[in-house]
Image 1 (cartoon, rainbow, N blue to C red):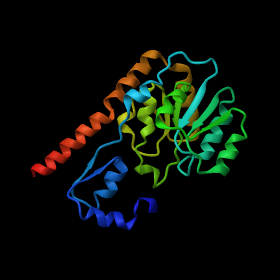
Image 2: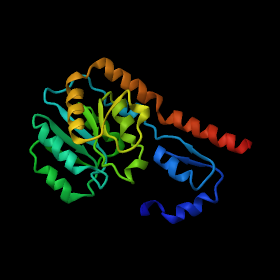
Image 3: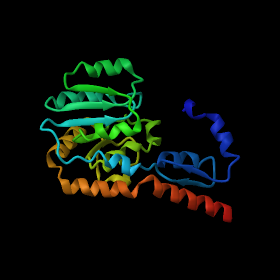
Image 4: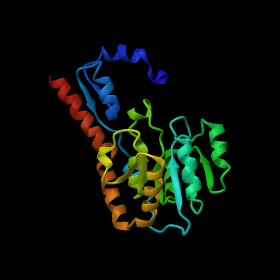
Length: 229
C-alpha cells in the first residue's frame, strides 16, 4: 500500500468532509478512519467496450485476460489453467511488470502476450475472446480491488470466471466465482461449453447499468447532498 500514500492517506482523510471509495474492502478499512465514507464502484465506458461484442467466434476457443501482468495475479492458478486447456489459446493483453513470471507462462505453446494497448484498441482484442478471466491472488491487497475489467468483459457480452479475491456479490448472477483451482477449471469449462447469445445479452444489459455516466450521476448527487448539509 506504499504506492497509495500509506500514512499520508490517513492524514488526508482527517481533512475532508466526505470520502468516496471504489470497493467494499476500502469501505471497510476507510470507515475506521472517517465517519462519512460512501461506496461508488468503478464503472465502464460501455459504448467503447460493447464494440467488442462478437457472436461469431473462431472455432478454436480463446481464454483472455486484460490487465497488467503483475504481482496481483495467481501464477500457479494460471499454469494450472493453461495445462488444463491445451486445446484453447490464452491471450494476455496488458503491460508486463513481472517479466520472469511472464516468461514462465510463455513457455506454453497456447499462450500469447499482446503487450500494453491504448483503451480504444482493447475492444478489438476482446472481440476474439470466448471467456474473460480474472485470476487474481487472494490477499490483503487484492481484497480492496473492484476490477474495471469485470464490466468491460460484460459489455463485450463475455462470460467471466474470477477468483474470490474480493466481495463480488453484485455480479454473482453474471460471473462464475471460484474459491480454488479445481473449481476455477470446472467453471471455465462450463462457460466455454454452455454460453449462449441470450446469456451474452443479459451480461451486456448488466454492464450498461454500470456505465460511467451512471456512476458520475451518483457522485454528483452525493456531493450535492454534502453541500446541502
